[in-house]
Amino acid sequence: MTIEEMTSPPPAILVTGSFQEHEDYAVYRAHGSGNWLITYTLAGQGLYRQPGVQLLATPGTLVLLQPDAVHDYSVPRDGYWEFLWTHFQPRLSWLSWWQLPEKGRGLYAISLSSSAIRERIHNTFLQLHADASAPSSHLSTSRPENNSPGVQRSMDMLQRELALNGLEEILLLATRASAQQVRQALDPRIQSLLQMMAENLKTQYDLKTLAALVALSPSRLSHLFKQETGNSLINVLIALRLDKATRLLEFSNLTIATIAEEVGFSSPFYFSRQFHQRFGQSPSEYRQALEQHTAHQPLTP
Image (cartoon, rainbow, N blue to C red; front, side, top):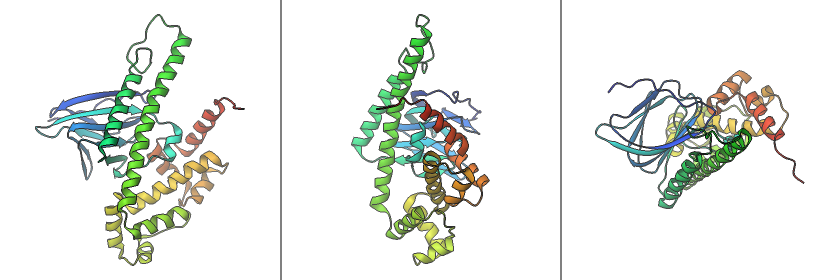
């Protein structure tokens, strides 16, 4: 099967739908898209690929691809795949709390075992799709000609916010389930290291020193950490630092360089590069967007 480069939706809009596909279905975008993509498998199997990575999505698997991550997914040979999907730009506040196990570069996934959570996410996806597909919304492909521009823009905004509410619920449920899975199974040695790093992000860590703290060899710690958390030690440490950085960007007036130093990055350039890879925008763009969002919020008594 020849896989051709696929186009992606415009970055600024929310697009959602459901597919039922067979083995001739494949998508490939070498540079990803300008927005996030979330998929939720209902039946069959979907195969995600990245260099050195293969992820099989089965019923109950939720996958999240960040902007610029490789899109390479398809239906396995003789297979079938039914899934729900949404391309979207997240609300800024989400970036401070969502965290799913990273399986590849910008490829995050969780397999949900609870039938109640799976059913809730399924229903929320369906409602999200209904909200996004309402005739009055700019999220659909047509715009009624007889609506006034002012009323139409207001309806567009309301429909988009309703759809984002549903998406936020899905991501909250998935993040909570991920945190519960980690708490239930985490080795106490790994838990102690995570707590120490989270409380002392400015400290520079190396594998040999961390391994000595929990009486393990560096190779054993590296293997155990990946086994317990689903991610490498360095990737988790970067995620902790970036999460702290988002809070400092929002709630302090510290410069980008100072924030980079406070959360343990060796240089502002490296900090900005890692921040952009995860959040799809630079630290200064993130702060500017927050300020614009706050400026448009109505005052409350």
